[in-house]
Image (spheres, rainbow, N blue to C red):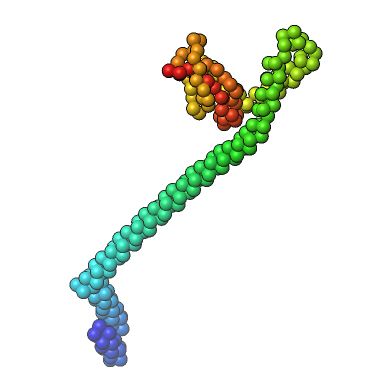
Length: 224
């Protein structure tokens, strides 16, 4: 509508110019009309209808809802990742603990296997020790200074010392209470020297190796 009025005014201005009207007056009138029309158009453009306001509020609400949902989704994803990391850390810790237990168990089994193998070999030397002891015990007093006897005695002591150095130890027996884990009672004997229930005689010496019994002590016990 404003464009039609402007066209109309322009036509009137041209007519006035044609009819000899004052050109300056016509120019001023045309400029004033143009400014008025522009102002009206600007006011019309700047006005906001209720529908536009409602649409704007609806868009803002939808955007806020979108941001809230996006933030909630991000928080859930963050929490899920945190739980996943904690689960992986727990799994790694358990696997490390299992590996440490496996290594310790393997080391113990390896040590036990070595000790059992060594024990089986060392058992074969015990009769040699017994023979040395029986042989030296049977030497008469007047023959103990004989060079051969002295040499056998030195060999025996060296042999026993080397056994002790690798962990072979004799089992104590005399005067101690009977221990089924170390002693094998084969008989009972009366004794005025030892208390009832204790070992009064050692018939065969026993030995251990790193806690492993190579041979039980064969003993006699005072009856209770």
